[in-house]
Image (cartoon, rainbow, N blue to C red):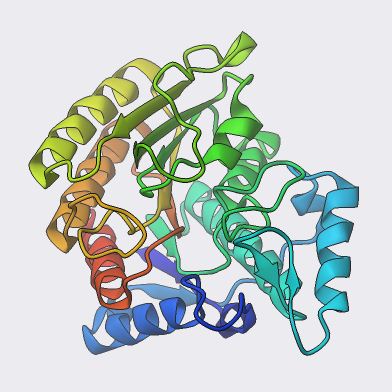
Length: 315
């Protein structure tokens, strides 16, 4: 069965009025899943917060403590960490829940308790570097989940597919010199954060384990899908991952206000189905996805529901 990981406390993280990464992002996803009857097709979980030792798999202790201090100092307001990223008093707890969801999900999938899982949580994570919060992200949820799998000897190698419209600089930064994680990113170029050139392919033991596919604005959906299908098939064939993690941003949707790619709900369905089938062929279907971006609320809700529906049908 497909697991859906969601916690209402993730709604309490607040970047401030008018900020695109807002609590309503999770609210509309949950409402859409409920209205479309998808909540009856998944097994629902309220995750536990990740402990500090788990956060420290990826992030230095002093960085973790600094995020906690900033949140405590916010009082009834907010503390700005950079031009785009703020925290409130509840942000540290929400971020620990987001990481906790990712780790709990991969644990249940790796033990065979779930077929796959989708974590509808926030704040997102793929921009967070080891000691830097940025791009709405505090802790790198996917990277910590991958590290947990490796340290627990549950899976290795691991494939991270990042179809968020923005390059996941944090994931790349964390695994750039390591060979047990393959990082694939398809993203609009040029666009924030300015990383993700095609010649960024990894270093040392990680040489060749990073593949960036920068795409120009207004790339047609079918061209995007053709590239996605061909590339992912080659990676599965050559890398043979034992677990697949998806940084599931839905801001490559044609209606998203922060970018200019042309995907639709149908496109996200096709990508989900393709990856789920490849995962069945190569790693027993072991797959976990986690929410990253997506800022048009209607497009986000529909795309996340389409993604969840395909996961729930994967046998």
